[in-house]
Amino acid sequence: MNAADDAERAAINQELKELYASLSEEEKNEFNRQLQTFLAREMGRLKSDYESIKGSTSDN
Image (cartoon, rainbow, N blue to C red):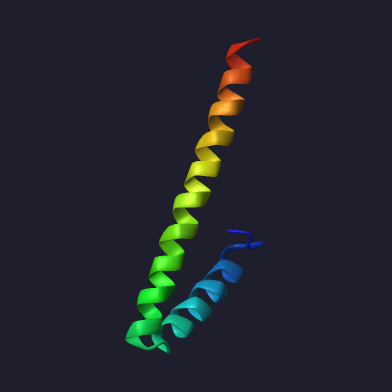
């Protein structure tokens, strides 16, 4: 998400894949749970930001 370019993004993705592969099944389950929580929170924040911007542009 904050990668400077495609090469950096690919390197980050590979590192994450390797980390995930090294986890036990229990750790993978916890990782997935935390990831889902993070994604839901970020999607909510983005939706709120979008609606705020959309609302302010329609007022003009």
